[in-house]
Length: 419
Ligand SMILES: [Zn+2]
Image 1 (cartoon, rainbow, N blue to C red):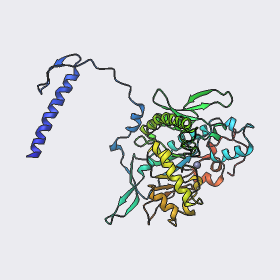
Image 2 (cartoon, rainbow, N blue to C red):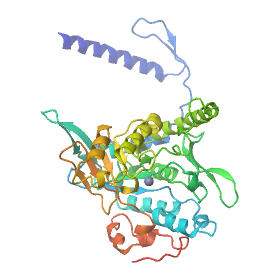
Image 3 (tube, rainbow, N blue to C red):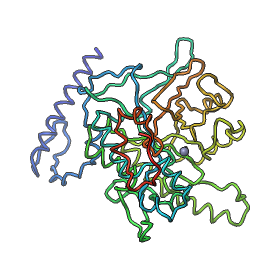
Image 4 (cartoon, rainbow, N blue to C red):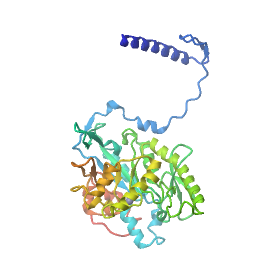
């Protein structure tokens, strides 16, 4: 009886919809709707609003095209990048000390090298996936929770790839070394980077010199490079705010300090300014994880400092970007010195705070689901000067690119290669 009534109601509803649609088909005509509502005049339609270009990325692959099952035993590759060098001619000039140049050469790629890497992984059939979709937590019949690797459904011929960006904070020290200075939301609804040209001092917006808009633009041009609109995941600290906004608290300024009201007002303005940027990033496929508040070493710091740091990240960063279950170890330092063979007090604490996916750095995209606690640990590869120059890494990275075609030896310091 109930089913029949429902079915009847559905039939009536569809008849009403069909008639309403027919009414909309004619401009400016008068129709009587069948449900005895008063006669209405259909207005002349408004001009169609410009569609969000990211919608085409999100919906590029339809579900019936995702016919390739990528099972739990197949590797999901993971590459991570630090902020890219926007002005390498400046970074690698006498304006910057030799030691700093060598550090930046070690850990970074230039904006142009980054573009070449994206093109190469795209050409080799990789497709960006959301890191949060790769593993999930399941509960067994005894109520015990464990992590599991999900089967990903991909288009035929594609291979899944996670990209993470560490330290997307625009640290003060980097602003003077040839990097962009913050992410902003343009009037066109796109993410741009604000940048100050170190040679001319001119401030402008760019989508060409910063990894985030570069990846956005690459995916807009190659929508088949992204599964369901996925981009990269930001691994954020909090001690100098996030995304170029100084949203951090200063606990050395006491509540009754005369400097407190001015500090709070300034901080609140930065918080309000970063909110629309975060919202747009989330709408366009970007996700967020923790890199600890203070970029602290989880392999050696005492538990009490790690606890304080974790609470502070949640208060100052998680409150803005939302909760996360992904933690990226600063310096690759593994909790308690070894997170794979042991589950020590630091690891247990971090897990109790909601973290389930623990990412370090290594020579392949190794991942291991822990047996004694609900957690997965995984390594990431690191395209940068150390690996681009290294003969052994040439082999490890050859599935992504040929380092000899990526590295810009004309602009980098003369530090040689071992290939
Ligand atoms: Zn870092």
